[in-house]
Length: 116
Image 1 (cartoon, rainbow, N blue to C red):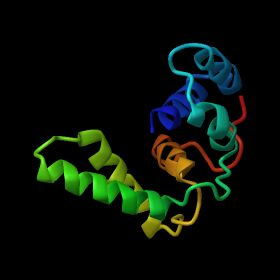
Image 2 (image 1 turned 60 degrees about the vertical axis):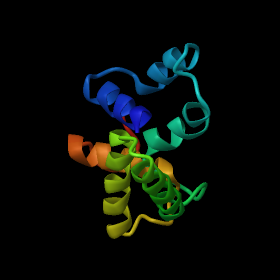
Image 3 (image 1 turned 90 degrees about the vertical axis):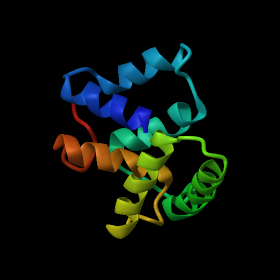
């Protein structure tokens, strides 16, 4: 979710999103999702990796466990709500990196590759 937000913000701010990926990838923000899904987020293309609907199922188990042990997990709860919306829109069988679709929609960034 954080990567989806960062890439959309970079795009809307006029930054070269690919250069932003390079810059943050060399530091503490480097991650598997950055290395393996940022390109797809920039292209607005979410081929199957780990289905959103399956991630939502697993996230539901984690949320239930958090409730049982009375641990607040507001970010996980927000992601669950966003995934519910994506699934309702018919995007449940796309890779879960399609969270970027939600951020892009909210920012008014049209579908397709982000052009700088």
